[in-house]
Amino acid sequence: MDKGNLNKVHFLPWVGKDYATGGIFKKRIMVLGESHIADPDSPEINDDANFTTKDVEWYLGRKESDIPRWMNTFTKFEEALAGKELAENEEKEVWNSLLFYNYLQTTATHAREDRIREEFDNSADAFFEVLNHFEPEYIIAWGTGRLYNYTPGIHWQPGEFLSFDGVTGKTGTYQLDNGHLVKVLFISHPSTAFSWTKWHEVIKRFLRDSSN
Image (cartoon, rainbow, N blue to C red; front, side, top):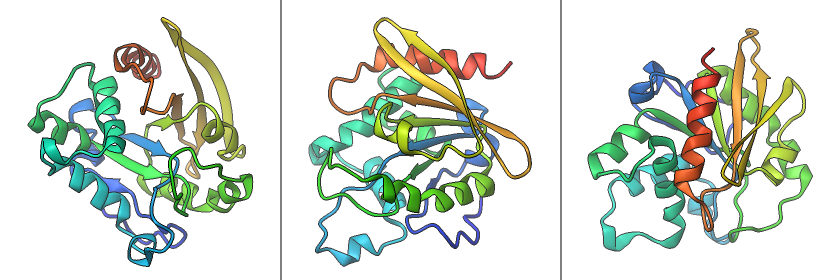
């Protein structure tokens, strides 16, 4: 799917080659992170519109010895989505089926850096531009705290909580300009203290129940 003319987006999303058809999931799924982490004195990174795509490409082309700790986020999420540990070819099938976008259009300098509400508000137009251009059917968002609280309240309808064995996801819908509804699940950020086996059950229920 062509990335088109996204005038308000700075960091373009990763668009898997099979995203438009739903890939192995047979559903158009968008994965929503919060922000990139980069050295503020590295303009070659902060000014790179393809930062997101290069991250995913690097992850999929890595060697096991090359994995920095933050890349465990990708591994744990794909396992939670697929419901198992994945071989290299299976990882590529997963990410080629997804769209991945970081909400904030400015970088953080380190993990868990506090981001102010104004930064989220300033990124809202870009977020809706991505939604209306790529028309995901489902969004799985990384964060049940700040990301959930600070993403736009317009065009939003909150839903039920989905729980399994001590973990709880928050759901809702965004309405696109064409009237279609995008179903959204906010999960815990898949970094430390993240049980992919438990979250798989929540994600599985979300995708199954939302198909009705």
